[in-house]
Length: 216
Image (cartoon, rainbow, N blue to C red; front, side):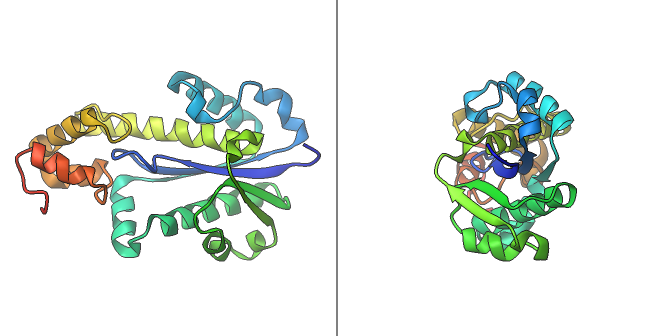
């Protein structure tokens, strides 16, 4: 890597429970020695991701945007489009890093709407080259952003579990449906809106498991 650049990635997009987290991270040649072991967070265990995120936070200019379920549901109701939410979050994270560390290149994973992301950037961000590539996590800056986003997602998910009194699993699997039904029985649909992304089809299964109509 000849010069520093920003990587951006997200976590929680496919998880029924928990926030959507977008992270951006600047990595320059001067940071590489401190980032040994950093790679795509999907290849790391949760404890390793949390540990590496601490090292990245001590080393690199970064920004993390966490959109909690209540705010996420409000945004989705307004925009009706996940890619628009992602573009907004990516743009804000990129801008926040550029405030700390000017650079000319931003790399993200294959983004569904790169033009939309470019439009969301403020004046400073529009001057950078935005490169959207397949398997971008092979890039160290994107991998670092991936780790930061996942670690923050895990922390927020644990906090929501404590707050709601039900252990909230990752993903959208059968245990997620069971946990969602437990939340609904304990706190009603309003409680589910505090911890889950309601536009997921999983919501219908959760409400049916809790003995309620999926249209509520």
